[in-house]
Length: 308
Length: 308
Image 1: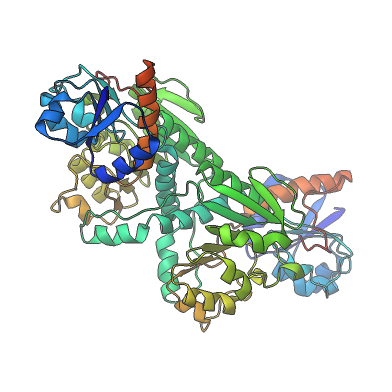
Image 2: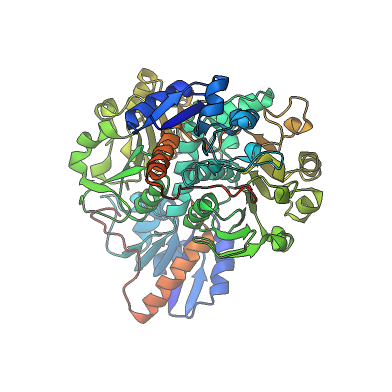
């Protein structure tokens, strides 16, 4: 076999089963003995499991990450002398499921109806609909575009914010990240799908929260680094009509002692908005492996400087 | 003034305010004294409020209903010698909001995450996504088409069922209502947006529920007549993994003593899935009134024989 594959995932058995079905030529799957780590040229890995081993992976040529967030392996202290690919374009529908189900549940009072039902009370609420509301989406890649498309279907106005400011499909308007402060006061809903990078650290801080509407609904489904959680906790106390829906955090699991758990106007979920399934990852890996054999450019290459 | 308008709604003051802004020519709004009811040629009315007065409305020429369901005024015992219009095409996005928020909340365990959060527990569930699931929609008009479009965006397969069986936009397939029994076993989600008519009475009965998947998610957001609630209650007891989400009932409010309130696997809401707002109704009325003045065909005419 000319290629060896090192598997570093939390579900190695599932991956072996799926990879075997793909029947990929000239590929031997090896286990993670120190000798194999040093000698294996292709890695299929969860980024946090690969990170501590990069130093001894002398023969690593290509690492296929099993999910989108690769910040653990593209930090400045890590090497960048290999090809890194991640998984993309599969998260849009699941992110839309997450964002719109929590958004509509809130605006249409699912909890109130649930409580009325328990008491057999037929009582309607002053529900709000999405129509004519404004959604500001930070990040205009494939996930942001799917969110925008869904928002348009519900009659919303959708503004995109990105590093380039280029107009992208499904958005009514797109602006540069440096115009964020001008957009925040008009948004009924703010959704961050930003990747992790030094430029996005604490982009949502007290100054930014203070520019948002009193009853804004704020989502972080990108990476935890984008939110100053201390500032958000203060904002949530000062603004009881605000809602924050958070799926990602700087430290995961979110520590028990973090005060933000105590807020009534927050939804906290354990990084489940858009998981990549082994089936999806293996499909992407198999396509990339066939390209690798042919010497063709791989899909979803990560730029080490940008971090995504 | 050549035209008189009789207002019969639960929000007459709001309607007067909105109608005044429209500045419609040759139109006098009158109150509901017996003399006015007998003499007024145009009615803008909630169907249940108009129903008992049709007999004395000797001069009624056109009735604009304030919502979609007009079964109260097209029953066989009522007259049909006037023009009846209802409101349509405004409900799609709100119906999609309702259906998909309850659907996703269920498949992605909002309740479990809410309970984990209360105990500061970071615990993921085996969430299901909509992708590759099959949705069967009964009713392929504008509401059904919007539901289908939303379902496609989430990667679902969508089958439509209607009286004609004609292929409509956004559906993967459409079939005749007499082929319903063949489709039911394959549907992960069944959504009824059927209008009320003798043909749709109790269309969902024990025989139909027994053909559905054990873990089907069944929505009734059309009219209450379509569901035999006794049979549904039995089905929910026999099939603990089934979920029914019900917004409409034969008797509304749903009586306190109805056993279905007791089920854990039911969501009951008080006919709020897609309310028409006075703003939307007045826009439709104003457009129709301008057509009326010009002698042009009105929009959204109801066929008294079909009942919709």
